[in-house]
Image (cartoon, rainbow, N blue to C red):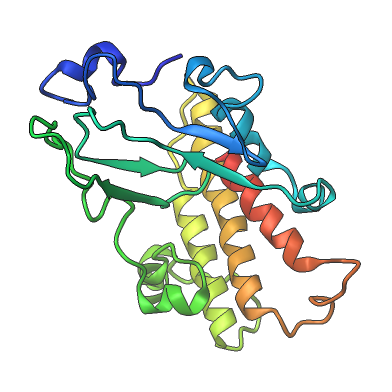
Length: 241
């Protein structure tokens, strides 16, 4: 199934993404140095996104059991291409996007008509988020907690430590965002609206623990492998969201 814009749409002024008649350019996915071919692009059997992407969704311990492997994406811009600049984004890792500028493009190269806004992925993290390791702008749920969660505490006998403040902030965020309108006509919508902040809180808790719980008993236990557990929680619940 083709995503929009389809090849037929690429001549429209809204997109201007046709690289030229007969020009073939598309990302080719490579595993262990073997890349799919343009003639058999994205066949879903030997390579392509449908084969490549699931490799990044397995638990870390299974990843390690497979042994060393290399993954790459190859993108070739033919000399007769009308592409002057383009964006790439990652289906797997949120926020990993950038613009690529082609040197010495064709004189009739397409103009980029849809620039990526600087705040496409949200505002830069504030200092509190950086200290917590959350990178999700939970700062307002720390500084404005009495507004979002008046009279509520989520940890008993809090110490006021950075760890405590971070946990209180993310728990307030989850509590606030899980207060949704009941929709009897679509119960799945209610499930989604509550599941997402609930899962996201597990991701934020894992990020905080990876930064602030390194001195906790059991964190360095090789058999428990707590850091691996935290990373698996982040990866799996991110994918589920």
